[in-house]
Length: 275
Image (cartoon, rainbow, N blue to C red; front, side):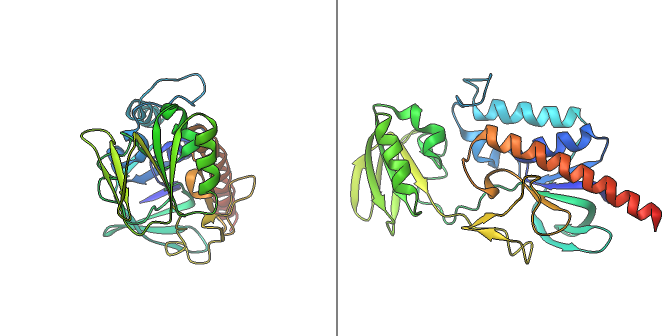
């Protein structure tokens, strides 16, 4: 099937991009995992989205999905296995099926590597990947920062400044997070501490295998002010383009990427008619 824009990822960035594509009268297909697998879905509360404090991640993501559906965005559950650029379009395989689009928006978030024991089960219940996003929820409480990046210590210092009691683990080989419904403790390389929050800060993995030749910097996709990558017709938005890893930033990225992708699709259509 053919679309003007194919969006990879159904989080805030991808949904924002798709809505803005539709606002310009262009067709949009979002390929993504189920909503329940998005990290935002498991956030108990999001307090840093302007005008809508206190919503759970599930409430916020469900509202965004409804908005996109009402705008006429089409959805496909699945995983993109391959993407090939041809002169006329991008050809994207999802499972056994092939789709083509004049433009693609990459908004698939970041790959976080192998998870620790207890990490997936307690995500949004004390486990977080962003200190600046969720730190205020743990003010005055004991937290652990498990850092694998050059900026992890800075995030630990941020948590300390806002009143968290911070224990920092520097690139541990093994960790286990324990708790009955919520984080209660963390053990890294044999050391166990009580904690109500665990911030796991890993380097990202750029999707260069899916898009050979895609320019990245420090693991993040390189984009210009239009959210355009170095590959013609490919745009990127959200966490995959770098921090801050917050909903409002992702939605703004998606808006720009969606507008840019729609404009690219319109220009491509004009070229097709002229040829």
